[in-house]
Every structure is written in C-alpha cells, then in structure tokens.
Amino acid sequence: MSDKRAGLTQNQLDSYWMPYTANRQFKKDPRIITGAKGSYYTDAEGRQVFDGLSGLWCCGLGHGVPEISEAVAKQVQELDYAPGFQYGHTKSFQLAEKITEFMPDGLNRVFFVGSGSEAADTSLKIARAYWRKMGQPSKTKMIGRIKGYHGVNFGGISVGGIGANRVLYGEGISADHLAHTVIKGNEFTKGQPETGAELADELLELIGLHDASNIAAVIVEPLAGSAGVLPPPIDYLKRLRKICDEHNILLIFDEVICAFGRMGSDTGADAFGAVPDMMNIAKQLTNGVIPMGAVIARQDIYELFMEKGGPDYMMELPHGYTYSGHPVACAAGLAALDVLKKSGAIQRVKQMSGYFEDAVHSLKGTKYISDIRNFGFAAGFSVEAAPGEPSRRPYEVAMDMWGKGFYVRYGGDTVQLGLPFFTETDEMDRLIDALGDSFNALA
Image (cartoon, rainbow, N blue to C red):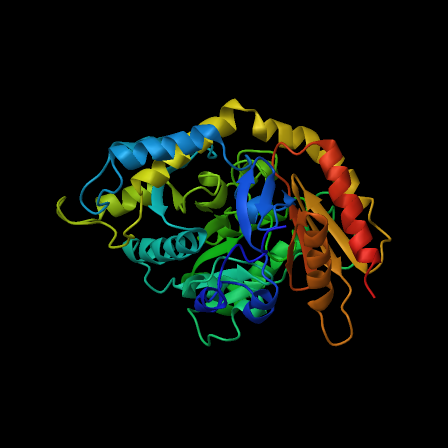
C-alpha cells in the first residue's frame, strides 16, 4: 500500500494554507487525491472513491472527459493567453454565444470572470452602476437571504447569509437579508415544498424599511446549495420576480450550482419558472477543468451602458479581471457545453432524479437525520447536533464515508450530495446504503 501522503513531506503539507479546510486535522490525517476518471477519484492509497459531489458541484460530466482534455491541450499550444482588455480572441465570443443558447429568453449579454465569487461581485457592481446610469444613484443597497451563499469576496459575504462566512471579517457592503425558506412543517419534502411561497413577501417589509429608491438588487440562489440544498417553495421565485418588477428592483439569480444540468434543466430559472435580470454562473461551465465564471445580463442593461458610455473609444464599464475570458478556459467551456448538449446529460438528470429522490428519502428515520431535501441531482441532510458541537456529526459521517470509498460534502449541520450526471442506479444504491450505515454508526 502506498503512502497516504503521496510522498509529501511535513514541510510541504505545512506550507499550504488550505481553503475552507480544518488545516490542523487534515495535516494530521491527509486525504490526498492523485487521479480521477469518470465518477471516481483515486486516492494516494490507490483506492477508488466515488465522487458524490461532482468535485465541488462542478464536474457533472465526470472526470477526464476526452473532448474537454483535447480542447484544452490544443488551445494551450495555439493561444495560451491573450489580453482581455481592449483586445479579443475568437473563442471568447464563440463561448459567449454558446452560453446564451442555454439561457432564458432575454439574457444574452455575457461578462466573463474567473469564478463564482467574482461573478457575484461583478453582478452587484453592475447593478449599482446600472442605477447610476439610470440617474438613480441612491439605489445602492443589496438584499440577500439568510443561508445564502454568494462566494467569499466582500460583496458576496455581505449579501450571503451564512454566519460562519461573515463573522471574522467585519462590515461589508450595505445589505439586508430575507428569511431563508426552510420552515417547520416542510421537513422531508420531496422536491419543492408546497408551502412557503409567502416568504417572498418579506421583501415588501424590507422595501418598507429601506424604500425601493435605495435598493439596487435582490440576489438569491434559485436552489441554495452550500447551506444544505434548499429547494425554493413552489411559486416563491415567481413572487420575488413580481415584487421586484413592481418596485423597480433588479433580480439576480446566483446559479453557480444550478446552471447547466444539475436541476435537470438548462438553468434553475428554467426549472423553477422565473427569469432574473442577471444570472451568475461558474462551476459546470467548464466541467471544473479550468476556473471560469460569467454574469449574463439582459440586453437592455448592456445597451444602457453602451448608450451612456461617452465617446466610443471610452470603456463603458471599468471592471474586469486579468483572466476574464481566458483562452484556455473558453476552449474548455466550449467543449464542456458541447458535450453537455450532445450527450443528453441534462435530460438524463431529469429522468433519473426520481430514482435519486426515492433513494435519499429512504433514509428518513435514520439516526440523527432531522430533514432531507432534494431536487434534480442535489440532496441535503440536516443532522441533529451533538451536545455543544453542531458541526461534529456531519464531519464524522463524511470521514466515515471517505473511509468506505465515498466522497460527500459536509458543512455546518448538513451533509450534501451532488451526483455526477451519469451516475448509475446501483451506484446511487451503494452511496445511500453507505450513508445510512455511517449515520447509524454515530455515537
């Protein structure tokens, strides 16, 4: 059996300050991944580990997809980098058009960024700038939602509603928050809860408090993923859309997890029947192969900046990143979206989500599971807290699952699943059986 550290020295382990990781625990007992193919990782001990979260919600097509790998290799040789400021390259325009083919009608102007966090900050900045261009500069406040996750930049944690992501960093931008949609009586709902749409009306209270003349945008995830998979109640998003329209407020959907198949549809907007003014995407855009994200805006938002941009040699939006529209990322995105379309992956998620739903809900009544939520190929389990340690049991379950050859996500008081799109029924069964055993093994 090989060294589980994959030959790493202690100094090498200590040198890396790992993101979103309990560094002290990890470096005592490293979990090193050395390879990946299809729906499985290979760890440093040579074990095959089922990827129960599609990487970090981003590798729905599986690992080592030949078409993407070949596109990336070819692009590195052809054009490895090109400046995105004042100059362009072919594939960035091609990918922008390709993305719009997956979008709801009206969302057709694409601004490239490097990640979901950058997409969140970009959409918030565009929202504020839009109202200034409209002659309403007082519209600056953002409305997020409790339990919402919008990345880790200052804008994202300000509108985000996960306390652990905010507490260390102090004041962010001016933001307020809607209540989350996990309410008593909806426990163990399969798919979208039938009750809870009225929670959208809390936005009216925030409008009464701040006045619409001071509110730039509302930003929500159609389905909140990082907080434990929270599907929206039926018609909740439609009510948010209506209220925003009536009060002249922009609506932003953060679809970094939802877009490109996980909901069994092109986007969460499509799955839940509500169209935003802007949409943030990342993750599945390149199947996780190269970091990339984007904001897709309504055409009229884009046109306003063009009309009020001054002389045509002046930039209309002073914003962007060194790696916006990176050539290699664009090549990966074009290949990934082409495979996504041709393989029928999105349709397969829709067809198989019922089986997955029944499988995850078969764990109702299992020790310490207090709620189960699901939609498409995403599921979340709420876990009863150990005395004084609300995060311990999810951690223990995830470590036990890793030992059994399954990677799942744990965070806060939840355990989360996000299946690769071509997961077979027997793989689902093995995953759920193992998860039940891990819960039942808890003290």
